[in-house]
Image (cartoon, rainbow, N blue to C red):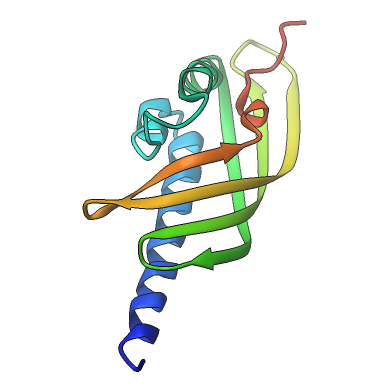
Length: 131
């Protein structure tokens, strides 16, 4: 039992690192880096991929993510996130849109790395509608 506590602490830190990398990728406009952390077998992966690539190509995005709840073990983690996006169009005097959602996410350890295998709602990442 004494060995389980350090492993769980490591797992919590690894998930925090994963979430931080997702936020950083969006804020850097790097949709591909964001998608590197997503399992391609995830339901609606194609829709997420299209949304993320369009979002980061057409807009400047800043992301802030807080972990509200985290459960699981060293193989699978379920995380509830408070996810805030600020989206600014790259067009001159383009609109700014703020979005805030509670996002449910499931991550699984794939070999040595964690991958997101479920992410809802995907609509949070849709590029803003053209006005």
